[in-house]
Length: 127
Image 1 (cartoon, rainbow, N blue to C red):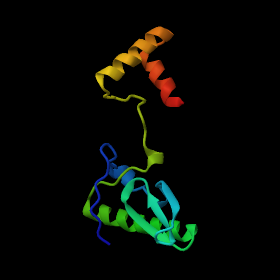
Image 2 (image 1 turned 180 degrees about the vertical axis):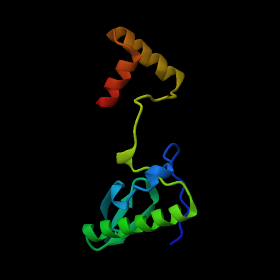
Image 3 (image 1 turned 90 degrees about the horizontal axis):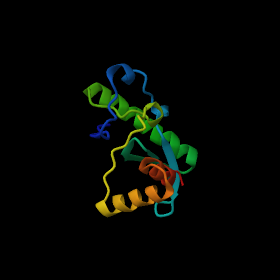
């Protein structure tokens, strides 16, 4: 199996971590496809991959098998391997761009509420 996949920015696996990445560590979902008449399995970290099966279990088993082959192939080629979501770390910092008018409205709302802009945005996101 040959796959040309580009991991998302900031998701490279370093060589040490690469040794410990296994197909079952990735984030999978399985959903019924009425059009295809089968269950379709997908993996979040490899958005271009999919596999199908007559049951949820078979679709999950198939997509995990495909990911295993892709990991082998990427490793042999020395290509970057996406870090499984469960192994990623997050700083808690986010650089967000927004329209100037939205920024103005949020800043005014935070002043009226007597809270920081950061607190206001966090509370809105948590809802």
